[in-house]
Image (cartoon, rainbow, N blue to C red; front, side, top):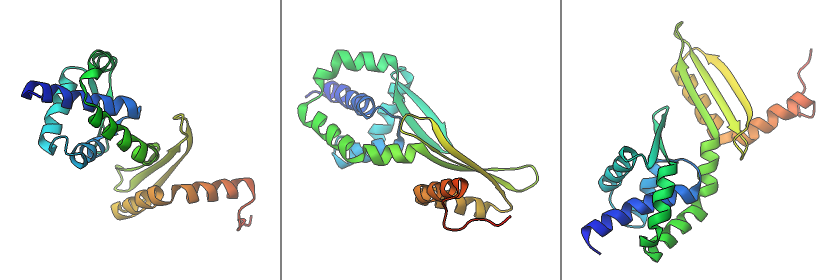
Length: 182
């Protein structure tokens, strides 16, 4: 395939991956796919992502230092016209990556924990979990005195969200192992 053909196919596979995943993907997730499959190197991936954003085929979303990409309507239209230019092996590689990683990525995307400095020197920690349809199940906001505590809470929330949410619901509806005394 010519260099122009490879360039086009590489951009198309990025659009294909993002459209088939059907959720915004982080830069890390995209790079993991392209590098594991030896599709392109990190620098080419960054260049193509930037070009796709500039062409309005991708939206670039940045939240708390994480950049995520999602396909725009123009990107979906372009992919519809040119998807047949993606080689079958490359589509299969993308489909395999999606099958093996979609639930993990979706879980990471639907669980958030962030902290923000307050004027008084304390830190506001916001932890949330959403259902698969995007509706928020729970948000917990806590103010702590140190950045270190805020970081620990964020890490623990992300690693133990199912257990924490289950314990909170059990306590709220009175089925928890320990019941607070009034």
